[in-house]
Image (cartoon, rainbow, N blue to C red; front, side, top):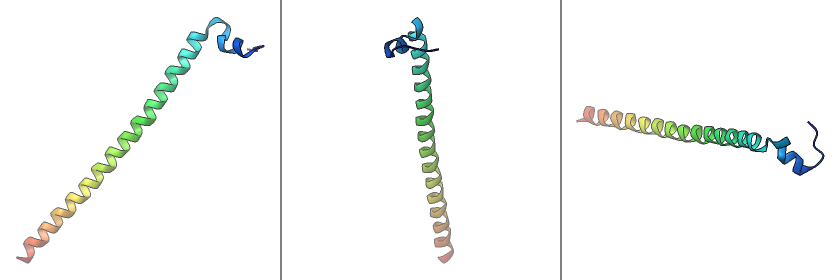
Amino acid sequence: MHFSSFSEFLAMGGYSSYVWGAFGITLIAMLWLVVSAYVTRRKLFQEIKNKIAREQRIKNAENMENTL
């Protein structure tokens, strides 16, 4: 499709609400995926960090019991 002006491009031949609405929904969905992945990644790393710290505390406690 060829547009002779920028306003004609924005109007999209009378289908602007559908075209720009679809772009908007797609953009929001893609942003949601990025944010969701980032939050999940942070939670996962925090859980791993907590698990490692817990295992270290258990190991230290076992070493203390063996020295008594």
